Length: 529
Image (cartoon, rainbow, N blue to C red; front, side, top):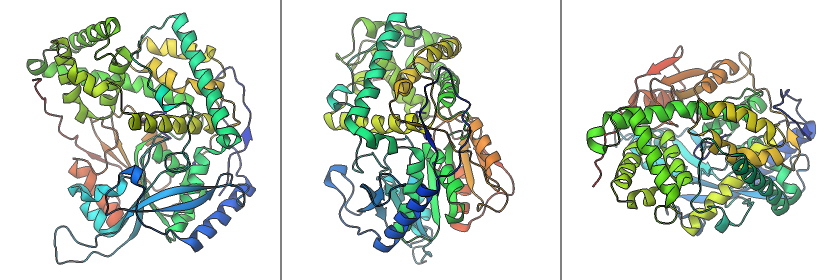
């Protein structure tokens, strides 16, 4: 389930080979004792070894104040003495300085470990948030700790294709693809799944959410933390939910920011259908904002006229790609990212306006071909995303069910539907054993109180996911940013949201019941030059 990247669990799921003709009602499975024992062994070793923090890898271009180290985790937790992977961990120590009173020392509360989502996202840069004013009080009390999950460079990086081939030049993005186009994309997806299996070999089956959750337990132990303080965004909320189910006694505090729906019947095929539908609403929000600022952008004074401007640009790009690199698919990708973060709205509207007025450069800058290093990172992130989601759960085999469901959905939600299909379609041809998702549920007293944050119109992780997690985690409290849709709201510009976040992380205090915050201000328009 993509979340800018995209989205995404001691026991285990039983592995079972699936070849289905339709979505499976995935029944939860019992924990696997061998993997539970293996996790305990690995965590014990990590606690004894700790982490030797030093300079960070040069390739990651992290600031000098940040320190890095590695943690060993088993490739296969059922065989903890077998092949090991090294996960790279980053840290900046708690400042212990109260930002409101320079003379006051703040008690250290341990490590706050963060996962940014994906799956396939790296958290190595997370400790840098301590420089942002909204995070300074939290950075005073906590060591800020990030890490690159298994498969994410530099932690035993996965690759499914040559990075130079990952960004395929200007491409079409039909909302009603022809049978020939569908056949071409299905063949590409099948080839990609085959290449993933060929490049990674049998190890590929061990890149999944449950092993990510076990890795999180090992990282906790390596940091010397008796209990975990964790914050996950997007897919990181699913990872956190799985950890909470598997290791409830090891949880100190948990923040779930922008929640993936953990219902095992939705992971991951149906979650993606719901995401595509939600992006149509968010695209409507964006068009309404552009129409309100027609005096600035000249793209139309109604959402329908803005849509016409967008379609005109797409048609022009199909005939002649901007800068030789930006076609309709690149345009759609750039505007899809604006569906995640409304901070992008002025930039995207400015680029579309400039393009239609004869200046393609802003659009090329925002949607054009990336650098070689950028392509390498994007290919790695996509490989991890694909491996984790395809391994995690049953998917319809072959293209027939995907075609039926998404043809129907695209009639009412054309903006993201087919792009989402092409992203996830390798899972229809995946060669590794599939799992059945874990049924996350905790009863009263089984888990410390947890904080859930969600924007009401978030498209990447639709709001129903937050409500579902709230029902499944006893003692959790949901804070909603009403009438807002930015993906990831912790530590942003909303003082109300940040107040709840600080009260929980710094004092363990939650609202007595679910709470609401007014939306952040809408972005200010930027005129095209």
